[in-house]
Length: 163
Image (tube, rainbow, N blue to C red):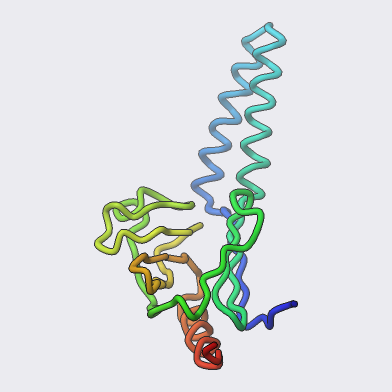
């Protein structure tokens, strides 16, 4: 059965500084290729560089609010949706977080330095929605539109009928 879509956002790693780092690595690999006459080194450098570029270009975080809950998919790490059902959500709130200080960066992270010890799914920026689960765990979903995501969750969960 297909769920009703309330909100959808897709984020990708497109920060200029990240691509400058990748460009620097590409220049390094090209330099290695030019000075090396070893076919194995040349092939390895090409495979690593192209692999990194393709991997980073295709990384994405999909976030959706549907009529049963909030779901995320961080490709390529999640093949299926990870669903946080409304019945298991205690509360949601917009938050400003410190990616490096609280989580050690962006991606799928575990917030050992933040007071909530939340698992974070982030791509860029420092805004997100903190979801408190009834089992005591916390999930931070990074978003470029935290007011929209937060209000979508609140509106959709209010229309959910308890079992």
